[in-house]
Amino acid sequence: MFLLDCGEGTQRQMMRYGVGFSVGDILITHLHSDHYLGLAGLLRTMSLQGREEPLRIWAPYGAGETLRALRDLGGDRLAFDATVHELHAGEALEGEGFRVEAFATRHTRRSLGYALIEDARPGRFDAAAARELGVPEGPLFGRLHRGESVDLEDGRRVHPADLVGPLRPGRKVVYTGDTLPSPETVRISRAADLLVHEATFAEEERSRARETGHSTAAGAARIARAAGARRLVLTHVSARYAERPAQLLEEARAVFPRAELARDGWSTAVSFDDGDPGEPDP
Image (cartoon, rainbow, N blue to C red; front, side, top):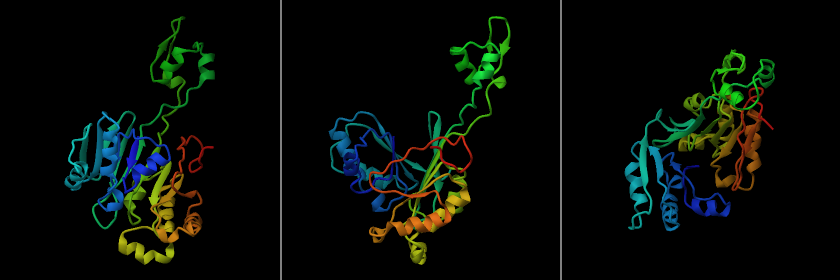
């Protein structure tokens, strides 16, 4: 489980919505207080709960000293290892079957976005064709789908290429943090299954957005459209729109119809795109 940014009150919200604290990696986009001040309290709570599993904190190059000081705030040593790692744009942390790639964003200080990119999946297995070839159902089906050739009892050899289609892409989820609309975000978000993009302002505040290094809802939607993303979720909405969030959603959907507006406690599943490009699965 990943936690993306850790503002003040993060642990309270995690408890409120039953997320649990089994986070393995925390990814900080930049050192503005609303994106990292909750880290000290969250780590202390994990320690008081007896956590033993190590935890990794990732952040832009140059943020390490600040985050280590925050980690150590409170005096007593944590009951688990919490290591801080600095990243440059283009670097990635590798997992089993996926990677999380850091990319440069455009804010008022050094900042990164993060793209979770799964490895390609095996192509579709043609079970009907396998039966016609005389392959018995069971373990041999699995071996062929994994790319192994198998020998049948009659001496024939069946190869994966006979039954397995071309590789299918894994899922891609992109999280921008705070940023102006950026060509780099378009690049990393090509054919993303889900783009989580900040939308601090409406178009009426476009000049304010530029001054503060933020995006409008329509600006985020233009990025999603240019990237050919399947879905867009808007986040980091200014409190001035608390009574009229529909304004942002309407502006975004006028540009990119598959836009959604995140809210506290909201969750979504990210399905595989094995249908038509740009059309979410049910």
